[in-house]
Image 1 (spheres, rainbow, N blue to C red):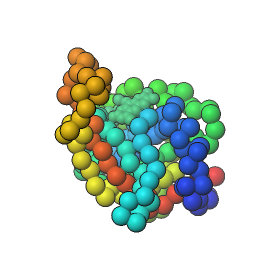
Image 2 (cartoon, rainbow, N blue to C red):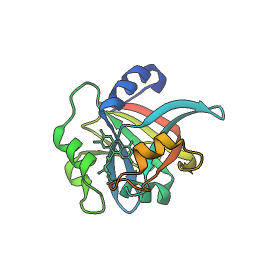
Image 3 (cartoon, rainbow, N blue to C red):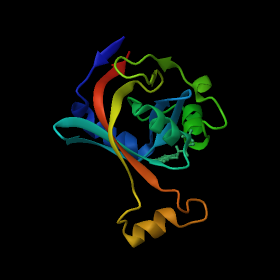
Amino acid sequence: MKEKINVFDHAEMIEKALRKGILLNSNGEKFNSMVIGWGHLGIIWGMETFTVYVRGSRYTKKQLDLTGEFTLSLPMNEERDPKIFEVCGQMSGCDIDKADYVTLEEPDINHTPGIREFPLTIECEVLYQDDIPDHLRKDILDRYYSRESDKDDYHTMYIGKIVDAYIIK
Ligand SMILES: Cc1cc2nc3c(=O)[nH]c(=O)nc-3n(C[C@H](O)[C@H](O)[C@H](O)COP(=O)(O)O)c2cc1C
């Protein structure tokens, strides 16, 4: 069962959850999910949106570019399933099937499932995407995109229109 919600009623909780990491699900070649810590709720062009930032090296980027949609999955409290968090935050969908580690919940509007273990669910369709490097301040460039491990591995911003939001019961 799904209890529909107004996402903005949960804004404070979403902001707290982001600081520890939430799940960004995609469903292109296959289901995949990755932990994100950067993102925000907003309003643009008269629509409620959730914007996420994905580095070019992520399997998730390939999937988002294929489908133009994503679903976010958040925990309802401080506790997170550590195994799911480890798999989705440290391993790549290029190498493993993350669907083997989670319980999928069919979406209502888009085509990207939610995750029962992370019940607060936000289904999105991408309205706009853009690559970050243009006009980036030098201090940010140095801090996030200049080390050996992240050199030139820029983020793409995806503004997702919120098409549905609910808590999986
Ligand atoms: C707490 C936390 C926050 C993260 N936030 C982001 C993020 O906002 N954007 C991003 O591109 N990667 C982020 N990552 C890294 C990805 O979750 C990680 O590289 C993941 O394995 C990518 O999976 P994929 O290749 O299957 O897409 C974060 C990881 C952790 C642990």
